[in-house]
Length: 270
Length: 313
Image (cartoon, rainbow over all chains, first blue to last red; front, top):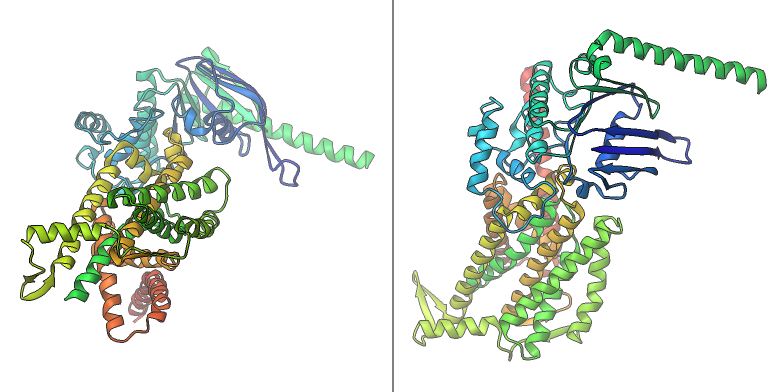
């Protein structure tokens, strides 16, 4: 279970560039729940995932994973609970290392690393079997440097790496946004397969209303650093891409209203 | 012949320096200047211990460990205190200058009367050859001393390079290479990139100090100035090695470092023989590294323009 209690984060505090990215986000995600996160640009979706992963420490509030308070834990320590796939296909793999070496690194995620061989034969056999399920023909190219692969192949491998050891929380940060439509579909299908097979607790940020409507059992919509909608169960199942677009339109109108009101007030009082 | 063997011996010894530079500059892309201090540190620690009556093996190992501490210090300054990597190295290098003077008690320790690895190798060589003081190699007269030291150094470098290669294939060694490649990814997989960099710099400077410890015993003295220009020297060796064998594989990088180091030392010996002023050596080494760094870009630009002009024509 993942629990955030009133987490806040402000970047560049006290400067003209101050951005209040998270403003007291309360979120409880039950085990096995697949949560889709959508929101406007700069609404704090990615910041929320990064706060959970520990890319930075939050200014206030607390984060619990599996009942453990990880609020002050550095990123690498939280990795024992968390599997991640990034938006940029280059972020999740080490380009100069081989496919096998990258997978071997992920097979010890969050565990101590000693002087045992990284590529021992049992692991290699398991890699070949697992990589074969991708149906990308990569099982015969395990010795090739990952840098020679396409973005879609790298993202598929990053997904395997993030879930090689079953994570308590899987964080997918727009992991198909940088891919061509065909690879994106492939990676989305793969994600859905793994998540439902392993019953992974997942947070997935997406810009695609199609993905948001079709995937997951719960959807949260963020705006200006807060959660504005939280839909689950039958409500989430009924949801269609058009409904989501309508909700975005509502947010936009509300924003405009805010600005017009502010202007009126300014005219009246300043 | 003695000149050739001597140059090659020094080349092989300094390939330890090249290994260290491969680790810091190539694997971590960390411009580690600590090397200039740690090569002298290894030499001074080994020399001081040899004078104090310790065995060559103990003195050499102590040199290695002292270098590891120096490297770890740079790593900690950089990763824990967020000091720029170049500056962290400069700080440690500068303090090592005083530390080295303290260790030696003066600026130079001669090792002519002490038992060093060189004497030990010479004795072993004489024993194997049945007491002859020279032998014939393809028609060349080689002194037993030179030949046995040469063989000893080659065996040692082979050993160290195999160990280094095997280390890079372990879980922790693989994590170390990945840290330089993609630190974001390695953090997400539960490795503290800061600790990895500190550990890597410790190994790098340990190897460089080992080079210093062995070099001091080979040339028969340790000197507080002997580290000056060593980073550029190591870089030059690595660049030559990469030009010779490429960087595609880990094994190539290591053998390349050895080949580059030996070849560079030979080139220098030839240049000095032809009358190059030794005072100009460092200037020329730096110019060489500068050229090697900009040549690939210039060549790429040149061929790009040529392609464009042919396309136009």
